[in-house]
Image (cartoon, rainbow, N blue to C red; front, side):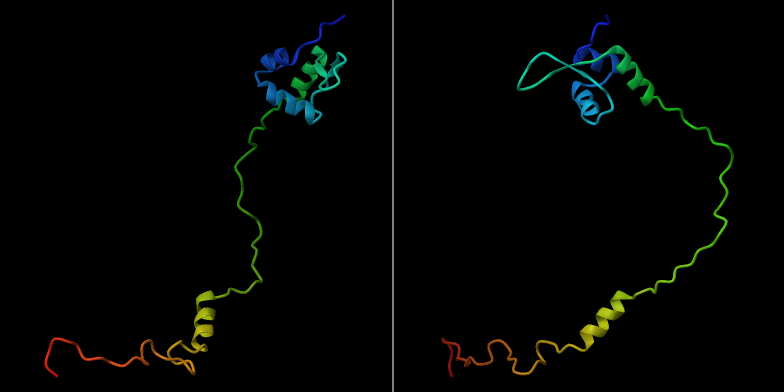
Length: 122
């Protein structure tokens, strides 16, 4: 019978943290064997063959470039119109009345009487 591995042993052998190991288990990439009779949290153990298969699946081979990349062979054109936002804003603002020329607007303080300064002769 093969000895099952603890999560810490598997994490150490893979060179990852126990948290990353739990994420692989949660995502279904690494199978585990539940052991014990814990009702709150099951104890997870790992078979060495499952760990070896996981490691083999994680192995990636880089592809070598086959040659120099050519430029794009077709030209594309856009059919969307270019919008000049500043021109649109200027046109919109030119048609709006300014606060001083708006009907019924008053200048600040226009309804106050001017009082003579004290301390001088009238």
